[in-house]
Length: 570
Image (cartoon, rainbow, N blue to C red; front, top):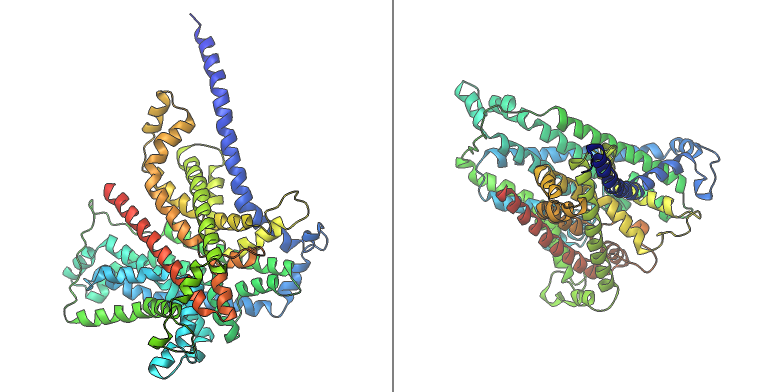
């Protein structure tokens, strides 16, 4: 019989190949994520510091930084960006906090209906919403045809751009505040009232502090979404004479002479601004939470509206009309119009725009391209997100905090920064093979932007799974890959599938990186809609937009239903 040291030595020898293969797999995951996330961001920084980098030279360091910051036009751009983000955040609070407080504390009539309708702005890509507002409010638009006046001058102004963006992002505040107040319940405020506090004092001293972290975090999120948005400032800002960092970066890539170094400096400035807001948001969420030590969940005791029932319904109706019905209605109506000049008349209705989408042509090709890229993005990010979440949550691998940070960075990066970074990284003569100017570059950009969704969903699911199941599988002879495939993956399949549906819906309509990176002869749905609007074929563009709304709505409804089943079973 073999001695104990001999058996231990044999076990170590048997374990070494397994351990080596495991570390090789984790190392490959690090390398892929570094290539996907770190490389483009690093090249933005390098190009900003070394303006001749695209020519293979490190000459004249910081020359572009000095030139860009010394340009008199730079600081008004930055000021417009900050003013735009701050104004949108403040208005989102002004609309979202009262509505969220009412939804969380009062028995609002048709409450679930309002929730669904206020989810709709998330289905509308902001650039599509801007086009809808243009069709509705511009001179000779639908409002002018129905009511005899237009609001084009108001829309094509800084205030109009802020309004369009606010209607898109204020639901973030609404849902954050309403859910925070639902979780806290109104019982503590009622206790305060029993002890002599007025309703207003109970709200200010008890209810509002419980929701303060949600309010602050959602305001910062609204700010970040506003300064990163390209579609609304690009669609409305050109006619309003308003330019922000995002539109200026895109112009430096699309207008001759191309200014790679200046675009990189502005991209770095935008990325730092967004990162600052993101870090501030996480600090607020991490360190300023309020907890109720009751020993049991707080009962949800809603206030009866009484004589305020009708005003409440009118308030929610007006809000949902402005955020949902108006832009979506303009988009759908236009998709059935033969010509815009024909106006709102039965004789002007047609299905030809939808027919052109399904015929063999640019529309059908763009739709198939976007659906294919979205499906590939969902598969790649789902696989990478699951593996990264497992390494972070379930292993003690050195450097897993860095891995978690890599998967989180794209959440704070504006899409245009990722697009700029991919151009700078892959449009160099040093690479023997490059994805630049192929559809693969679009897939890389989508993967980078969408990666945080599967990672967060999978991480949340993995934290609910005990380690005993994996240990039991290994005890019974399963390899690490078999444990992942046969035990862990089925347990997180539902939330992972929900996140992949969200990725598919969002990737199928992504605009800014598609505009920057689409190679010649390749169109996505977002680029198709944008170009059709610029070329005057508005009906075809809005038919494609309507198709996107239906696809996004169906997928997000499935994801929500799947998530609801997960919550119920848990």
